[in-house]
Every structure is written in structure tokens, then in C-alpha cells.
Amino acid sequence: MTLTSTYVLAEYPLESLAHRIEGASVLGDASLLVSGLVHPALVKMPSHMAYIASEGAWQSLLAVAKLGLVEESLAIPDAIQAKIDAGEIGLLVVPRSRVALAVLLDIFERRAVLDEGIHPQAFVHPTAQLGENVRIGAFASVGENSVIEDGVQIYPNVTVGVHVQIGAGSILYAGVRIGDRCEVGKRCILQPNAVIGADGFSYVTPKEARHEKKSTNTEEGFDAILRINSIGNVVLEDDVEVGACTCIDRGTLAETRIGKGTKLDNLTQIGHNNRIGEQCLIVSQVGIAGSCKIGNGVVIAGQVGVGDHLNIGDNAIVMACSAVMRDIDAGAIMLGSPALPHKEAMANIAAIMKLRDVIKGVKIMQTKFKDFEEKAQQLDALLALIPEEMKASL
Image 1 (cartoon, rainbow, N blue to C red):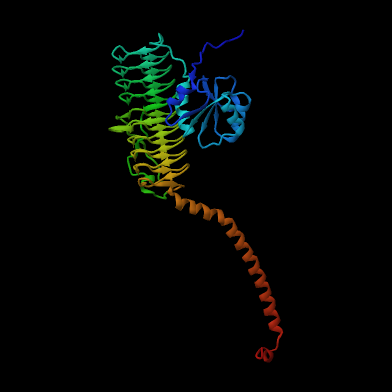
Image 2: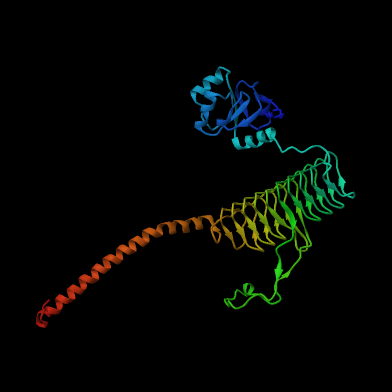
């Protein structure tokens, strides 16, 4: 049996795409139709636009492609210029290719299919309020007194708890879990299996524990570990994006809040009571312990760990694999474990890299010193053979 796709590619004149990108211009035939942006090696039809990001990618325009996206800083080869002058190809020239990439891939994106309306195998509580043009997939559930605003898309197997509010235009992909009383702003995107509003990791022992006292007594253990329940919620402000399998714990008494426009990558852990500012970028496998305050515009790279009750100032950058163990000033660039100012950390790394040469030099000195000791012993032996009256004249 032969399967055929019914997906129809929309086509846009090259000139119309240029109007959507600030500072863009067209070289060559501006009327050529574009059906998608692809890697140069994957061009299969005349309407495919090749993403020209390096000198080697120009070859696709000499072979198959008739359309290209290129940053204005990249020099155009003479052979390509000849094709432009002849009207055989069209180039979309942009100030920043990755900015253009964001605009164009939004135009040509093909999201997972979700049928209009409410799937018959979805459950929506009778008290829940749904806005216009809401889509809910199979086996999804919406709890009591929850409010789903206009244009929200809820994919299959999503669970929305009770008294939840989801803002207009938000997208919840398959397997997302939204806990009770949580709030999701407008135009938020939650990738598959994200968990918003799980219980915080908060416990206490009846007596002060060894880890609290920083005791070295290995005989001290836990008589019991008592749970501190989290009765707060999570608030995602507008335009927040949460990666796949990322978990955001609800606050103990109040809220855990993620600021407007902040983006969280996959496999990220945000602990209870955290307050993360606006327009932050937090990369995969970051773990932020509870009760931290993170400013606006902060970038935290992959596999960073942040201790509890810490403050990170506006526009700070924490580089990959760092361990944040103290507050960070606004605008600082930090690196290492423990995290230090970037220049200081790089100086330490440079010193460690020189350590091998230092060790090698020490070994050479040890060898020379050993030779010196042997010769000194030989000299002492010779001196012992010289009569005392001769030694006085030496």
C-alpha cells in the first residue's frame, strides 16, 4: 500500500517575506515563490530556500536551489552574482540570519495536528469555562472551575487541575501536567511532559540534622523526615516557554513565579518559591533550588546548579556546568565550581593547565638535586682521605 501526504505547502513570494524581516532586501528575482526554508543539502524543489550560513553552502545555488537566505556579511561569489544578474535565482539578504530564521520558521512551521473543538474522548468538567476556538485533544482532562481562554490548544493526554487559569493563545503539548490553582499566561508554550505545580522538595527533621550543623559525626542519622507540604501555586506570566520534561514546583505558602518572556529548556528543575524575572534564558539540565530570586535578562547555561536562597542580579550570565553557591551581582559573568567571576575563573583554569609543566620542571629539579647530592657525597668521601694538615691549606 502506498501512503501519500495530504499536507499542502503554502508558497510566498520572496519579496513578501523580505517585508516581514527588518532590514532585509532581495537580490535577483523577487517574484520567486518560497515554500520552505531548508538545509542546503536538502533542497529538492525550486521553491525550497537554502539557508546559506557558510562559504561551502553556496554550492547548492550552483547546483539545484534557486532561492537562498544569506547574511549580508557573507561575500557573494562571482558565479552566484552572475546568476543573480541573469534573474535565475533570488537571494533574501538579511542583517542577522538567525533573526530571519526565527521569523521564517514561524511562517513555515508545521505543528502537530490537533482537530478543532473538543475531542469526544476528552473530559471537561461541567464547571470549567472555555473561551472561543479552544481545541482539546483525546484523553485530555480539564478540572473543576478552571478557565481556558480563547484559542488555547490542549493536546492529547494533558491534565489541567482544578481552579487553573490558562491565558489566550497558549499551547499545551501532549502529556503536560498543570497542578491545581496554577496560572498560565497568554501565548505560553509548554512542551511535552512538562510539569507545572508539582509539590516542592521540602522536608524537616524533628531535631537539627547533621547536614544543617555541618557536623562530621558520621553516627548522626535521621530519626524521621517530615514532609512540608506546598500549598502555594505556580504563575507563568505571558509568553513563557517551558521545555519538555521540565518541572516547576509550586510555592510552599505563596507562589513560584516565572516572569514574562522567559524561556526554559528541556529537563530543567525550578524549585519551590523561586521568582525568576522577565526575558531570562535557562538552558537544559539547570537545577535551581528553592527560594531564589533571579533578575531580568539572566542567562543560565546548561547543567548549572544554583543553591537555595540566593539572588542573581539583572543581566547576569552563568556559564555552563557552574555551581552557584553565593549571590551574583547584576551584569556579572560567572564560571566554574564554585562559580567565580569569569576572568578569575579563566585565570585559575590557565594556572591548572600550566600545572603539568610545573610538575615536569619540579621532577627535573629533583633529578638534578639527586645528582648534586650524589656528587656532594663523593666529594665528602674524597675530602675524608686528605690529611688534616693539607685541608688547612685548601
